[in-house]
Length: 493
Image (cartoon, rainbow, N blue to C red; front, side, top):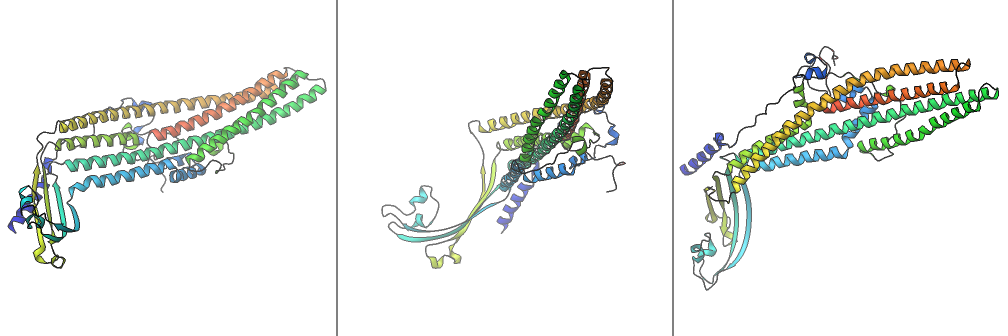
């Protein structure tokens, strides 16, 4: 009894020596934050504290229930998202496998054998040659008998140097990387779907502009024909107006084709077959509102962007692998044992005299492995350096991406304001040209040029509005999600 107690105390003491775990614990590397970030962001960081979390359902900021429904449907049915989730489950199973070595491994086995010992051998010869003790070893030559065996095997590696624990740590970090990858897939899906939806609504508005242009030009054509019949206009004016009517009408089929293709893309993003969705026509400015863009501190990027978190997770895993590789240089201490019932007669198999066992510690010390452990450690350290550089590069690219989008949004807002002023001026020009033409002060070519200017201005406004919405979606994605309003502006709910 004293012997068993001493052995148990030895195992518990070995397990409690966590200070022997090899390798350094992970510490997040220092990150250089741009000093002029607040100037680029053009926002007051004090309004958006660093501990404020982004709004998970950021797409609701666009105020479109139809878009919200499509995104929720895509998150449930998109096959890329489902595959990413399955990869996360696979990683969690790998964590369980990596941590299994921390616990005793017990196997239960049973067997029956009919044995015959050679007459040309000596009893105990097998034992002299290194065989394990057993009835077949000590049986007399020429004897035959049955052997019933039931046993339980035990093996427990004492993780004295932390090799298994470092492996578990690495597996946990890798499953964290898989989770961030799944989040990145979902974030990209939402961004692509939002951009596709905005493109469809842009095409709807262009179709509306084209249809309105055809109606206006058709009306002008009727007026010109009447004036030509009265001798107040030339046949050339009629021909020019006819050309413009056909030109405006010819743009409608191409816009219709582009809308159908974009709708097919949106259907695939939602996990549906092409032709399964029906979206009624709705102008872009009537379907979507353009939210304000507050941007928090740059340090929030480290807590939001899945690519940065994924890169850091791989860095944590690489750091743990270094400790795991170092542990291979040290002895492996294990507790092994076997016990069970063994009998030559079935009737006596379960009797007390059939009981046998063996248990004890074992140690394995690596002496010469041809440089395997050195190579393993070099690989782990090189892998860590690669992941460190990748982590730093990912952060720099994140800052660049956000800064580019902020500049783009700011300049597009100015561009949109100027284009709207241009549209107002173009419409005034049409009115003036029409009045002057009816008074006979200008020819109809001036009216046609003014109408063409209105069409161009309207189209440019729609394109810029859609481009700005697309940049907003890209900014949501670049920040790893949306944002909540400041506490002073938040609703009671």
